[in-house]
Length: 276
Figure 1 (cartoon, rainbow, N blue to C red):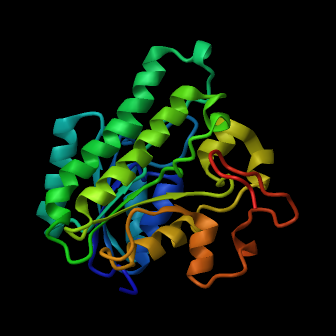
Figure 2 (figure 1 turned 60 degrees about the vertical axis):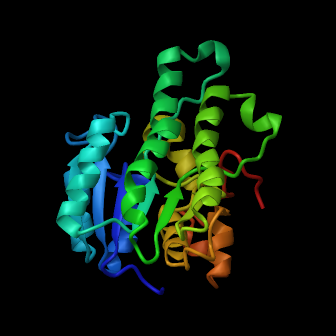
């Protein structure tokens, strides 16, 4: 499969950043995108809503269905999936992009933040995947893609933010388990994670400011890598913990310089992966 024309993607999050970039790349092929996210009104520090995202997706060539959905809510997820199936006739792709982050050490992590990260990252990913699966099983090339890191069980990835690492690794454990569970049924389940920090509004406004943005890659590298994964034969490409630059090299892209925000700045490695 070379493109996603006519395919329907259920995307958690997606009103901005990496999720929106993935949606717009699929839209260039003529895909249908169900944007299931909470952002119906503009965030004070982050641009974009599900409605502005839907406009950008349709401008890119796709069809969009924005649905207000808190993926912590079982009924809301079921309603969002049902609305997408009713509009587009099924679901072929499930992208678990929604995530919560708090880079705090143990003594500085309130349990409400612990609960939020686990409810959105681990539980939300499991719930969205579970709810989409009956429809994915009817697709001819179904994929689940989690935006989560490789399962590198090393102390250094845990020690500075135990709660966050546990929550993100929970998403990756869904990949490990579901890939095996659904391999014989033809549903691919993979993970994708960036080698470097990705230039998003959240990174700029909440995490690292302009200096970190200069040392980042653009969201388009994640979008192009996700597109490559989602167009692979689902029975042949599953159970992989993919890193964006390695995916692009596999896709035949050897020059990654155009993805850099500032080619003169040294790239900053993201969490959970070693720099190259």
